[in-house]
Amino acid sequence: MLTAILVDDEIMSLNSLRLKISGNFPEIQVLAACTSAGDGLGAIEEMHPDIVFLDIEMPIMNGFTMLQSLQYRSFEIIFVTAYDHYAIKAIKYSALDYLIKPVEIEELSQAIDKAIQKRESSSNQRLELLLENLRHDSKEIRKIAISSPEGLQFVRLENLLYLEATGNYTHVHTCDKKKYLSSHSLKIFEEILPVHQFLRIHNSYIINLDYVVKYIRGEGGKVVLEGNVTLDISKRKKADFLKAIRM
Image 1: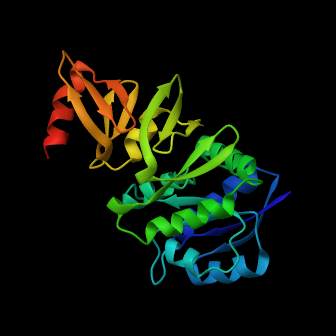
Image 2: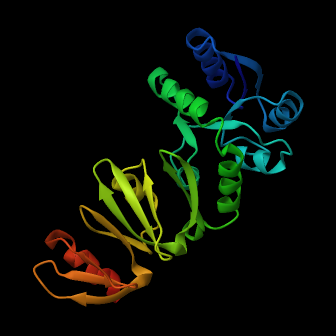
């Protein structure tokens, strides 16, 4: 049996989520359903749940401020929000999960399954990474959690050289010549990496523009990165690449 605490200032959303959990997930016991971040803070510190379902936008104290105030952080967290805004990017960087209101059963089930699978891995590290990233402007997020079949690898953005599609997976290549296999597709990385620093130049590649050394002309051309890494640029992406390196 897993235990959970729900925190949401919207009573209808809170009750709806509680009913969906109790009616569909008998393996989860809801210890408390809190209508404010302050109440949620007290409940989490006292009850030490396995999972916290947390709304982001709340009056007086939002969900992120509440997390920063917690002493106890050894739980899986699933964010629940009505907004798809900058905070979602920070959540994705940290390999954490979120649900958009109104919560659908299928998406709730997937999020709970992931939380159960991740429970024995670096949940505290992922939460700490989120809080670290939130301390900076969204364009200056410093570090990303890379989900792999073995677990999580935490890498600074400045150390990412390029990313290479491998089927539905991605090989992440770093400046210190390490390579990590991520269970995320290249498209997911394209959505969350900062566009001023990273560019998709091909169906198979995203590069860190900070490490471009040379452009070799051609139909699409080639780019040479530091470390003498040479990659093809697709004809369709050539104009975007040339514009990016001239900025």
